[in-house]
Length: 199
Image 1 (cartoon, rainbow, N blue to C red):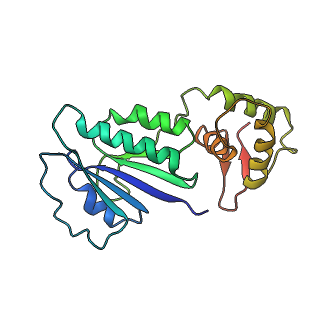
Image 2: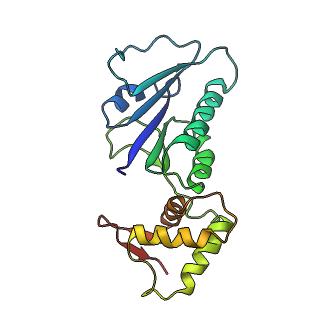
Image 3: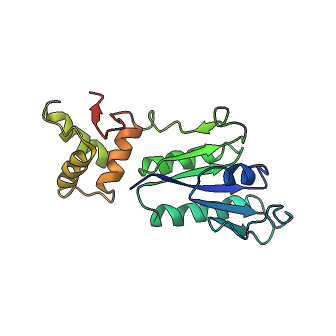
């Protein structure tokens, strides 16, 4: 299935993000409006991919908590082909984003709506964070095979991991594990879905 991106916009924190996001090819756009915020100045009536969530009440980090709730719901319900983008200047998001990455989901924070080249995308993909223990076990089994014997295509690797996880205690799916291995730079996948192993 083709990759698609769902974005989550803290409009209080990054007011220019909505116009920027509408101009991009995002599959779904969740816009979070604080209770003190005026209505959006863009006609969204024909944009079915945009959902505006108006936050009631005032409180410290009130909007952030609502955004986190939606992120959690989408993490559970979105397919493995969906990537997340959080629009906020707040670096406090980075730890949560790393946690989502460890769960196997591609996720980044975008803190500026300049050109794509200038966009600061925090996707420091947990390369330095510890590999989850269940994924470590799977990777060790892969390492026991010689490079020549390891699966060379993504679908074959996914099927191979699927056969391994039957004997392990893990809540992760085989595609999620492939994504985690990729994020940790333990494998790379080219445009032809060919897999290359780091070691």
